View 1 (cartoon, helix red, strand yellow):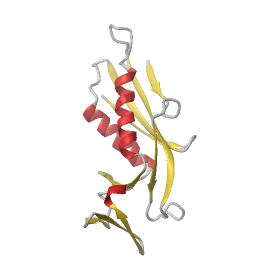
View 2 (tube, one colour):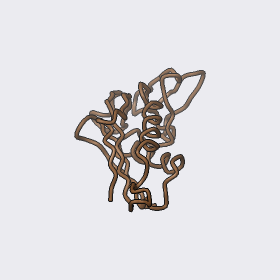
View 3 (cartoon, one colour):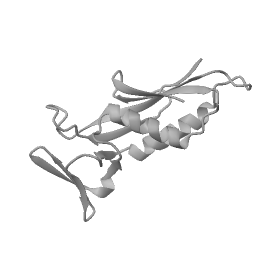
Length: 155
């Protein structure tokens, strides 16, 4: 059995700016309206549900709020440094200088939908207590309606 949360209809959304180095079009600073989706698979528990929707939705909304209206900076990327309240991000032959207060440093190598899905999934595994009947989770991060990336994990 599967439980599904659609980020668009559940209002688990955020707007953010990012850059994908070495990509012709996406190598420029640009933004998206994102949604975070989830699928939880497992057997029904003795209470007749897989797990409570509310705890998952609350967690996902917290992540979305943290990322909302920020520049997504992959702190594992080469060329990223922080100095004097600014983030410097060298991308090819240009270097961006952004106020640190407008950025969020993420433990990823590039700020793509793929790595954001993995980031959200890993954080969810750390923070959300899943009942024993949950067997698998999937997290999807959409960059606009109809296009996104999904990561999954067996529990």
